[in-house]
Image (cartoon, rainbow, N blue to C red):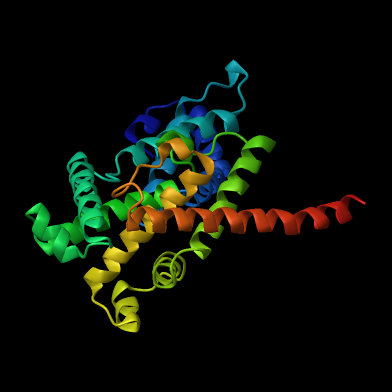
Length: 285
């Protein structure tokens, strides 16, 4: 307990300690829900610590005469503390974002000129950076992009912290996004799909994936960035086409490949719907 709690009347202090003991599982519940919606590098211990601190403060400040259930009051304080902790995390600094935009423009220009995806070395040389600097920037952006792949492209940090039960419409939209994400991953080129599945789902070290594919760690980092960019555009093309940014020359090789990928994802989705309709009708019957 804090020095503040020691200054409380004994009865109030005992009541606060009982509230804290009884509602510690509430912190764990909110942290578990939150961890399911943030990148894996977010520390569970840090969120738990913030939540427990908020629980203690909530118990100390709780006024039963206001007729507000403690669990509701505490949950609001806990979610607020977790939200503050998430805000303190540097998902991707402004400088990282700015350099990422510059590199994206460089890659797009090179892709249009070369008719293929440029290598990290080519991008670095054109941008006047070292290969390590380009790779490090891609890594930073990739960590932030994982967050957006788990939700809509407009997800805010506030949306990450669960505060109400999802409505049927929200549940349907979330399921739809996950369906499109699975289909978009399935339609990635084989090597890009393997990188995504091994790195993000199997959590294999980048060095192991590089060794299996016979490429460098730097190349795996580049492939990961390519896959994430393609997945993001694939989801946007299906769910919000206005967010899809053009890449390369109109009608160029890079654009034709992207359009073929978008069409493949749409076809896979349509086929899934066709297969599911008879099953739904049988269940309804």
